[in-house]
Length: 186
Image (cartoon, rainbow, N blue to C red):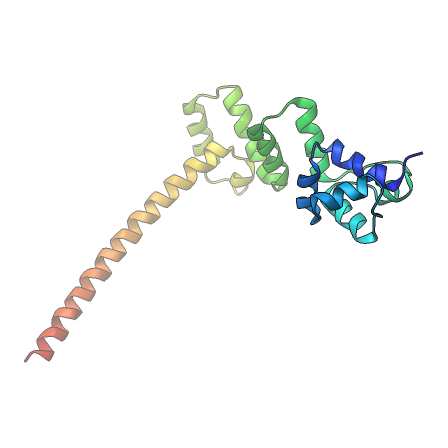
């Protein structure tokens, strides 16, 4: 039967950490970790809380050996996906960020993905954009490319108006500055 000290060591080994690395994660020295693992130091409630907050460990398992060993967290599930499918950092982050999106945003990303995979022609995207322009549900039903094209088109007109307004305002300010200069220097 394993002891709490043995289980403590098992957690470190399961996560591929050195004693020093585990110590950094939970705020103990390397010698402190070593003393716990070899049984010369007791595992305190503080150590248990620190370890369970740093890793998805079932506190009952750590204290008493009662299964299951781990608890499922979004992070642990992602780590299992990464391991099972051999995901690199980019693929891991892509999946993680996708899962963080709101359902409507996921739909847009999914539609974009399928358009890229199916190589939807640009003309077809533009026609779809024109047909849906007046649709109240446009933003909910469009692909990312369609939304991006509409955004750019909309904002380029808005930007042109803003630039025009700024130039007009600048001209007005210049006129006012000139008038004040004349009055002050009379």
